[in-house]
Image (cartoon, rainbow, N blue to C red):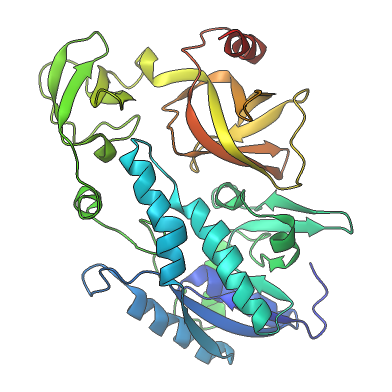
Length: 378
């Protein structure tokens, strides 16, 4: 942990229990702490959907207990221009984006960091479950001790300058520890439910929400064997591995989305949760970000996640002439989804990651090296 001395820290307070306890721990360590509440969405800011007003009240109540000041800041324009426009463009292209990653890189660790530095802070802090270890050469992003809550998947886009200015007070704690500390300290949010839904926007009836901004184009649903089985309302409303909401009846096992043909506006489905079309051994990714600033070498074995709620999987890397990365897994992976992030690890260190562009064939070869060879030949 960084030596506090009289260091000034600006912490992002969301109105939830995690950031509240993070602020508490910083005070206990002797930091000079100021809270900031970020409002980042205004397009339908009403009582039905947006909990920002309630969250602000909770953040202020936490500050009252802790005896620290709270500032409010509106980053809605930044969020719209640097996160939400990308979110819409990805869905319009048939991919399934992960806005939480961009929320971190563009808002929490760019706009918020810039604000904190302007306020004279030496560090920012958040309630993420992660750890940072820095020496004179570089900073490493390490997984949180609570494996169920580790959030490095969403933080893999952070750069060295941001990490060196960041504190993650919850990195050594579990979620039950956090709630217990909050209750012991009399923080009013100790039992508050964790936030869910789209980053900074919250829970929505997703198709209705997306339909406000994008016009879906109906098209055919085709089975994996080429049969016409239904009509979709727009490829943007569906994601790889999706089961519900397809509107396909009939006998047999449930149907799942296994592919999208964007050029032909066709949704491809197959029956059965274990259908072979749902599984691939390799993927291609671009827009790679390496936290150290140096691409990981290909000669080593790594672990990777293709979604947040997934144990890390053994894999190997290869690089292409056009700057993409091929990731080949020892075991086939289910529902690899273009637009999502693939994040790489070595032991407990998060190395970085990129955006999944697609799968590389069915790749039924028994080893990742063979998958990489097949990809290179193709």
